[in-house]
Amino acid sequence: MEKTRSLCRFLLLLALLLTVLTACGKEEDAAVYNIECDGKVYTVNHTEQTITVDGAVCSFSVKGHGGQVELEVIYPDGSTYQWSRGDRVGYGGWSEDYDPDKYISGEEVWDILQLNQRLERDRSDSHPVLGGFLLLLGIVHLAFPRKMWQLHYGWRYENAEPTDVALQVEAMGGLVTALIGAAFLFT
Image (tube, rainbow, N blue to C red; front, side, top):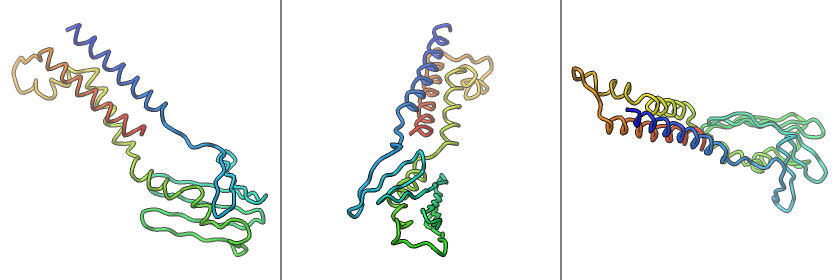
């Protein structure tokens, strides 16, 4: 019995360690970088939310997640461009004094910030509710294999007791479930 509890504690710690390591390995976009497009070099600064081209500094803001992205660009002369895109639908507009040839067009900003890729990534990779549920369920199985065995099988038989192997299988199932949940959350 003590051997089973020790194994469960070890597996729980292993699952938590793997969760932390998975979260630490997540790549983040560079804060400042240059990108060349049609012979021009654009400097993108995500910290200050600016794009600089030919000495002109344009501000931008990007909002949204889970299949919806909104972009707003504010130009040095005060003109603006807004665009929002979701599932197969895009809409937006611009101020009356907006001139796409004067600085950088809103469509170019959208492309330079790679918002189509972000939209696809958000739509396909994000499953936080499912990931959280599976992670929690796996941890419960790891921490309480006897109770989980009772919920699954013990109620069917009078005075039933699980074997050590049954408890280990229950704990291993919890580990696998927790790892799948962590994968949904952090990748």
